[in-house]
Image (cartoon, rainbow, N blue to C red):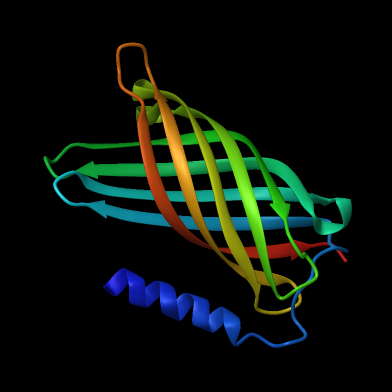
Length: 172
């Protein structure tokens, strides 16, 4: 219930942004920072921080660039491991001139650290909305499905996540 209320407040704050805000078709890039927190009953806690710098192409409809991810998993049994991922990310924006822009996103990460000992890579696909809170910033909410490919002999892992984040737009 607390997470649902937090998500509602996050969306509401974005909707009361000024009417003049929005549109990034003339921008050169977008720097993003996204945070995921998930607490699974009888399993543990998953925290992930993702950052990317995306280059805006095609009048604001398409973006591509690198993404870096840090993840930490704490099991209810006291186990702990963390790791990182690096790879390409792409986004397709629908209606990029509006103050609330829906988008779809996808990334492929090569995993390292403790995560790299258990999984080879991670594929993520999702859909979300960017809600502008000024001429150069937006709140991001994304629902994603991730699949981590297990090392030989280990099972793949799949999860559905809700991510909240922030974007700063670069350039003119």
